[in-house]
Image (cartoon, rainbow, N blue to C red):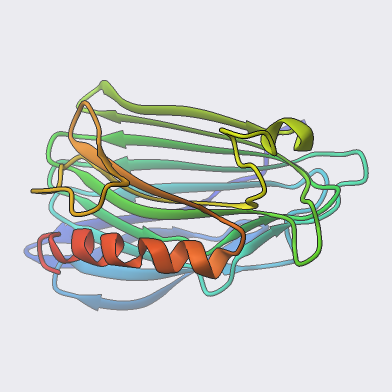
Length: 243
């Protein structure tokens, strides 16, 4: 059985002005241009239907051309619903060319009770390409323990590994152990990849071995995690060219 076609967003720089070169709708996502300002394009990832259900395979392909900037906006979060014995998949492949920039303050990704979802993010950065992104993983809606989640991220910079993670939260007993999540149900991350901040202003901001940095928050509620990460996000965003 073939995989469904991905939603695709590609942008380029044409003589100092951003241009959308590809905007493809999938079964699950309808990209919509919100505006163009100089070398920056803002695109909304609008849900085309209720997702994620058992058997769903939501795929995104993002290409940022040389010296261009793409900002992705999610008007609403993604909810993985009870799969009733099935499984859902979510994946994103991101390619950023030399001098390109991607800003993605992603909305919360909620794993409902009974859900079984695999999430994968692959990022390829050319020299001088950067990604600044937020990710908020929420186990369960209000009053729920939350379903099964396996989330992986692989990022390369100039062909060399920059960040490789494999988060296994498929067993609710193990993930509640001390040193994993404990009693928390939200894991939020701000990641700057392809460039390092001039300084770390918070003890939870961690420099990577290569060009990049992370900050994470583990909380009981999504709004608390996002509030904790807001200062880091704003500081790193303001440091981006053209901010």
